[in-house]
Image 1: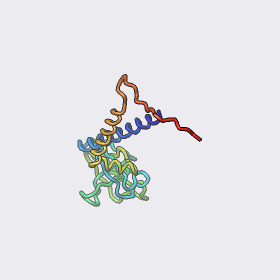
Image 2 (image 1 turned 135 degrees about the vertical axis):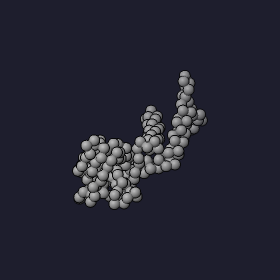
Image 3 (image 1 turned 90 degrees about the vertical axis):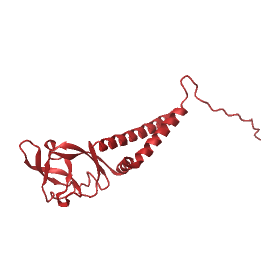
Image 4 (image 1 turned 90 degrees about the horizontal axis):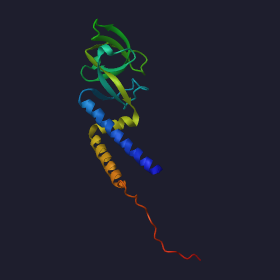
Amino acid sequence: MPLRILRAAGVAALVAAALAAVLISATNKAGLTRVERVTSGSMTGTANIGDIVILHRVPVSSVRVGQIISTPNPLHEGRTLITHRIKQITKRSSDGSALTVRMQGDDNVSADPVAYHLSGHTQRALAIVHGRWAALLAFMLGWGRYLLLALVAAVVALWAMARPAEGEAAPTATLNAEPVEVC
């Protein structure tokens, strides 16, 4: 019985991983989320180098102090995003559609040297995927998701074939051995 439970748990884990990869990939393709890899140590402890941040597009009017957002880095125009925590909102338009914020990496001793001007929408951190899970997610978002889906399909098919049909007895093993004389 424990082997059957372990097998079912393994199949369930594979199916859940495949569904998570497909869901993240689909929302990424639809523009609802964005997946970014952490490339610096400024957020160490919260988001380490190699971790993945799943970002969600939100109106800037919903952004609050303490939230982690990702926005273009004005020091490297058009080349990089910066993902830090909002430390202060210094200016807000009357309708809330534009903000000026100060941000700081969780591992940095001081705030970033520039103010960030946000208008319309920005990307807010929805989840941070750490360590091995980040590597697995990166693999699954690439061609690996197809490999994982094929593996899940194969495991489910084998599992279904190994189960006895409704009303059919489970196969039993018999041992046909000749008696042996012991001296």
